[in-house]
Image (cartoon, rainbow, N blue to C red):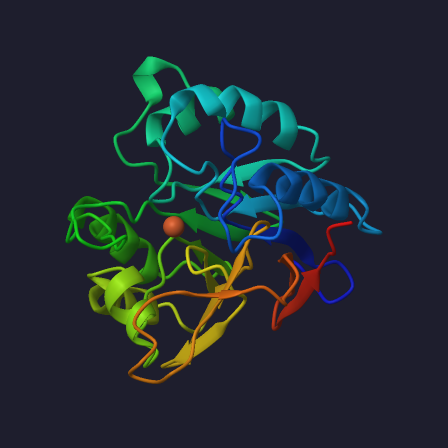
Length: 272
Ligand SMILES: [Fe+2]
């Protein structure tokens, strides 16, 4: 079991959005996704300790273009710690499994969900790219995954639990987050994970390009910054679409888990 003196330490990264066109960017972004991802790798590798693992909460690629994943592999395999991937709405689930995870045809899933254990902490990764309103970049977690997650969360397993998924889950009062971006069956998801609140260290997600935290019913939901461009979110009715945040640096979360505590440092890095 991890302790304060010997915690589980992982790095939560998200939304690298690497594009096959290395010159690709958007008008409000300050640099290309590739430059951001390269700086991310350097910043993580320069940390003064070796993380137990890195958790990428999805949107690894800009678009689900399978050809880009070998290039992504070349870059992200220079990270010194092992990396675990989730699928974002801009990703190709099968290319992630084949290229980045080295799975063969027999073990590739339609939806990428799996679990693993490090230092007696149980880490559960889900795929929130189920059927959803096609007008929005929202998502759902499939019933099959919810049944699996429910079995985990209602069990008498005493290990600390980390849950990860791409989409934001809980309504926040920010219209573009709640209507445009959110997991459409987030309420069902929350009801399930709440059963494990006593041992749940946090639900880690991405998708929204900002490092916000939401607490509900004793469950902490933690987003990581993108390594590319950031967005604002204001809890006002006018905030119906994303607002580029050109001031805030990119970043990632340094997460330390001990038997009693989840400690998160919001680490940022500058692009030179
Ligand atoms: Fe996304």
